[in-house]
Length: 174
Image 1 (cartoon, rainbow, N blue to C red):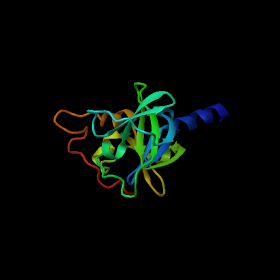
Image 2 (cartoon, rainbow, N blue to C red; image 1 turned 30 degrees about the vertical axis):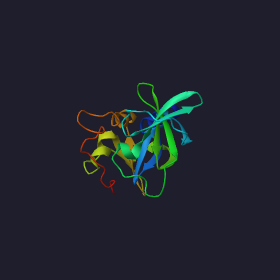
Image 3 (cartoon, rainbow, N blue to C red; image 1 turned 60 degrees about the horizontal axis):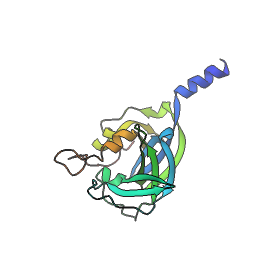
Image 4 (cartoon, rainbow, N blue to C red; image 1 turned 120 degrees about the vertical axis):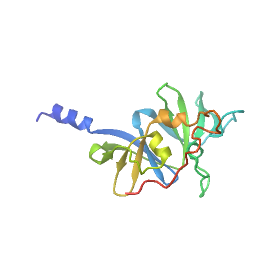
């Protein structure tokens, strides 16, 4: 098989993602939507914003909304202390948003042999934002859809946040 055909096949079966952790659950974002990772900046509060919106940051002249992913998925505050990692992602509409997470992981190639559709046993919120899961020896990573995650921050009629009654349960175990 020629090198170009082999490379084309490999690219169909793997893509890169950036991993981070929220609570006990690992998330993976498509690497082309992750702009950078920063430490938490000074925030300017946004009056009347949904509770998940922490405020605005000025990142080298760009004004970016910062969202607390723990609040977004109805998790309790971080037990071990304040999260300080902010993953700057770009939505499908081109808006840059900062996601406050507990831990950042790595950029890795996604091996499609370990990829599965989002299982029914996953907590409702992770099923709502997940495109699928990637299983490894030590964890299950939910491959997240950035736009669906950000849509959770928009209040629905009659609720305080976008999730209504959906709450986070234990992460999927394998």
